Length: 322
Image (cartoon, rainbow, N blue to C red; front, side):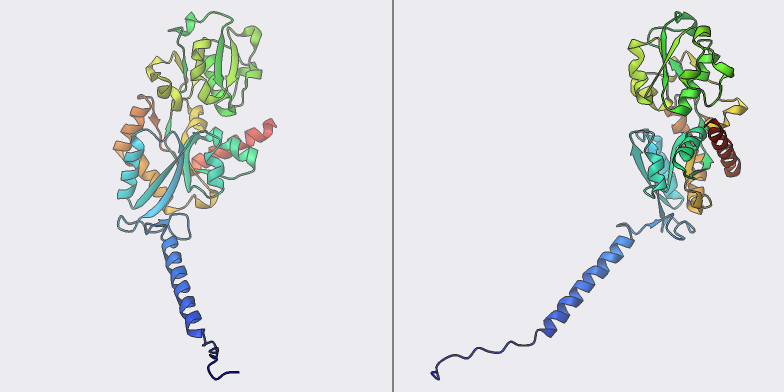
């Protein structure tokens, strides 16, 4: 072999390079962990560990609240009032009623606020769940609307009237129709009445059940329809247009009180309790809610224990019906 033949240099140790790369990777991972635990904005989640035990405007806790129909201005007012109390409120708007309870049960939400006690009871029994009410908001009278008639008495016999098809609002809507003299329910009616319980031979009108968000769109084709408050203004209706409503002052109306709902393990969470307090005691929020409801909201303050008792009573009645 010639003396001019170049020798291949033995490879140098790469240990310092490997160590340096490993240190860099660990640094990146550590930074990512710190960032993620801060949720991107230095906020603690109210339902994580003791995240809800201390509230401070300078160090807020985050609460994710689900609802249906969050376009009303009072939600922004509520967010601001909550922030002043040390709560960063994130509101998630759902398009349909069946969605917020599963989202709460699965931990996507810390609380929801869209339903009354009967609706929650039906969900719990059907899904073997244990969501509970944390605080009350208001009772909203349920109304009957018509584009053809200005008075219930003007509706001809044999016409068709529509009610929502979900169990709780269907029963409540049927009770409104009975009070208005349009139908008669077998056994006098209850919070469990369905269209099948209508005594057709003793009733003035036929009753059909439709999905809640479709009842207002059915108005051109039927004599009248029960329309949930969430859909009244979106349908171009006014609350004063109702030709019949139920009686929200009736003591038996407590199952129809709208509530904040939480997981059972969170019913004593200080941050969530504070959120309910902010809602109930902030006049600007209440004024906004009442304006959005066309002046129909009747605000109530009921203890958590009494709300939960009402829930369990309704759940037991539902089970007995099966």
